[in-house]
Image (cartoon, rainbow, N blue to C red):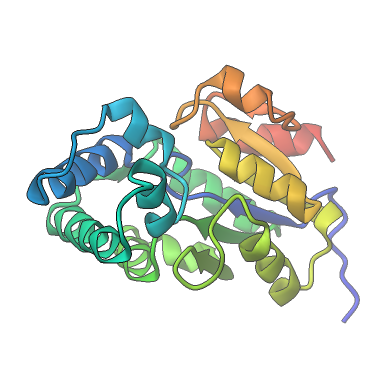
Length: 221
């Protein structure tokens, strides 16, 4: 089928935590509780924030590289328990309106996230956001960011070329994944990684609100 969508980008792929969902504080608190449950050496909150965006196993191994597989799995299990037991996270203001607008304008929308499939499906149902996305990929069903595999899989499934794909994210892992996949990287600075760190990855732009994304797309046709 011949495509008729003429904008520069056809596919917009979103990171989840820190980009669409204001979940940083809950992720940090859940990881701290998991660490405390297992009586492991405490981690500074900044250390925990730094691993947001990676797959859970990769994140834990970054925090505790000397721990064996059994301990890594135990931390992951306790983290999931605490995160899912009490999830107070809310989408960033205006996120749903942006998704609805882009969908109506004809953009294909997808999610590439470090979350696990169980967690993503749960929050997609709770928010109702699942209706906006044609494809989603999670770190526990492919390779974690910054490896490009999950983004490559989304582009292949939706039959969209890298040069027609925009990856939107709040961490260097998102931006480096986009570069490695040949897609365009767009940063948002209201999430986990600070603006200077994001700009060092040379994104096409850096937004201070998800609500400005439609205007950015309109200006970059």
